[in-house]
Length: 121
Image: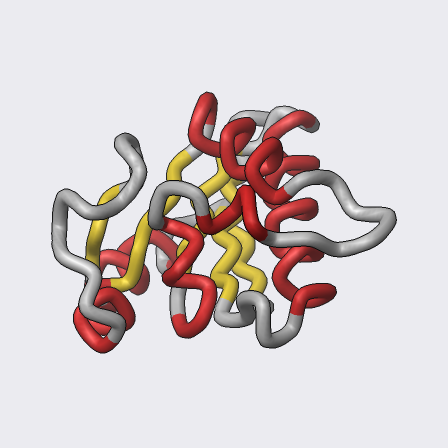
């Protein structure tokens, strides 16, 4: 199934916990199913690029966000939106190791390839 790539863009954070958790869950599940996964942290989800923020997140009957993040980082890719980081005062180097910062051009380049499915939460 590695020929299929899933790009998940999550804009929701602690402000909309169910939508946020669903995005991380779908990304981790797709990865476990053999898909190539790229998770983009945008909007309020940008905070989850910082150490300790996923660990603070709680949603009853949901997997720990930090466990989902770690699973995605272990075999997939997590990207923090450049503009979203700047608006929140997040500088390159503040993020968890392995999370890259990139902008809209990189996102568009990822989703315009054949065999790519994109989801936005």
